Length: 127
Image (cartoon, rainbow, N blue to C red; front, side, top):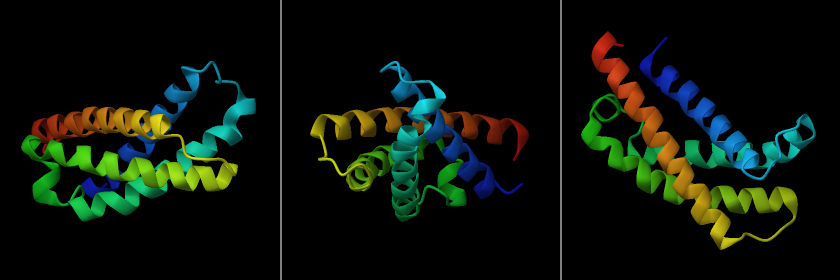
């Protein structure tokens, strides 16, 4: 498996975990909420993969250097408003600014943790 494929799969998994965590904080974890989770998961996924290539988050020299973890912050903060707008279109609802801030902040934190773990694994196992 290539490094890029591993990163993409890890990013998808982290977005899924963060989406589930977000719904769990509201007590909405039953399978009946899966369609609603999808209205958050897919917009975040689309926004993340539209923004991250522009910031080099899949380039070899960037993904293996811990000093480049800062690039996740602007990626998450640019992706959050786009994801919120896409979500609002799906739900026919307005975009709540507080939701955008929380979405961006938690996605930034989650992605930094995942990418930091990836860097540690890459250094230890020479992925």
